[in-house]
Amino acid sequence: MNVTLAILWKDLVTEWRSRDRVIAMLIFSLLMAVIFHFALPDQRPEEIRSQAPGLLWTAYIFAALLGLNRSFALELDNDALSGMALAPGNRGWIFLGKAAANFVLIGLVEALTACVFALFFDLNLTPVVPSLAAVVALGTLGICAVGTLFSAMAVRTRFREVLLPILLLPALFPVLAGSVNGTIAVLNNQPLPFEAVQLLIVVDGIYLIVSFLGFDYILDE
Amino acid sequence: MTESATREEATTGSSEFSRSRLEKRVDGLRGPSGIAMAILAVGYAYTVVAAPIDSVQGVIQKILYVHPPLAYGAYLGFVVTAIAGVLYLRSGREEFDRLAISGAEVGVIFCTLMLITGPIWARGTWGKWWSWDPRLTVTLLLWFVYLAYLLLRSFSGSGARTARFASIYGIVGIVLIPLNYYIIEMFGARSMHPENLKGGSLGEGMGLPFLMGNLTLFFAFVYLLILRWDVEGLRALDARRTAERDAAGSGAD
Image (tube, rainbow over the protein chains, first blue to last red):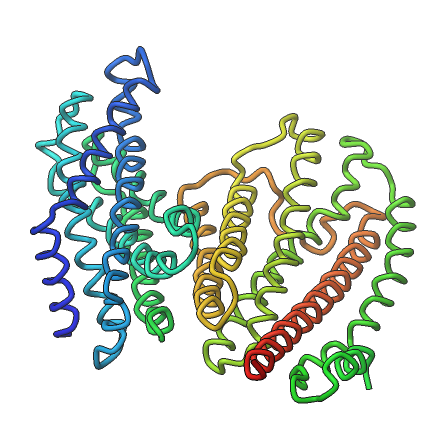
């Protein structure tokens, strides 16, 4: 458990000093908002509002991919990954530390992106902040669980930036389905749909367990 | 002694690099499964031709005798990959990793053929090539997962690390199957596919060709899987021999 906190702290301090990952993800998701404006021209406000949940999650997932790609690329310098593998105890705790750091950083970018989307697409998010935050947190947990595992794999292959999306996106369909469904309800001022929350909790649980156990084999050597 | 064992001894000159007993024993089933497939294929072709033509859908309905059996083969391949992945992670025996690759490749072939035959049938009966039907969607997602699996293998080269990565990915892939079905059930998309085929739900004269299709393609699956496993074993042998020759060469310098 100490390992988890140490890794989380290390990643957050590193990011605080450079701020490059958060800034890159944020600029990317802002660009996505602008791209959506051009890709869906001449929309009436109510039309764009009905598409907002899907657009928001598209921006979230691609921005998260950007951040996840860098998550382990940092550890390749000075062969830090091998150093990590030498840490005593189950390597699953290392995974939890990295996943938690990704969760915090991606969550921060998502919060800022939501504000920008609200501004650009004239969405009133203030009354739904708690329920939207709950859906986004559950969705992000799933992305970070399996994303951190695959990022550790992809980083040690050829074409790693290309491979991560190909590995990760098919695994994110259940997360995307639950998150978009939940977000649609929240933005329409309806209560959180039980099915979507249940799906997200089940997927998050499964992905966390598989990744925790699987990470032991990923960091070997 | 099996044919491949003889080949192996001839190529290596020793039994030191020979494949595991399990691989040799399974390889012995290749011939019988190939013969079973060939004999069944004749009966399969005959029964499909002789089967009655559907009064509503016409001749295109005969895709029924190919399409679902391909689906079973695809799922079987992915299950083999996941189980072989778990066995590899637990035991570290390379032959399980080779079985995992074989399962994924044969599964992808079956899945691809299913995704080709499906739209042809759909065009004839539903009037459009593609619909976001739940089973179609799940199969497409699954196809992407196993294409990613094969890409992961080809991008990470060979070796124990690749084998471990692929094993983990294969396990995540199999977990996704029930999850994807869960999404679709939950969000209530209406399926254009029939519910599970129950006994008697097939029209008169359709049961036998359907059964023959399942049996033939099952044996085709087994035959291809063993053949692919054999090729992978020979490849591993070749790689080892080359490595040893290189080592001996550099030792002599």
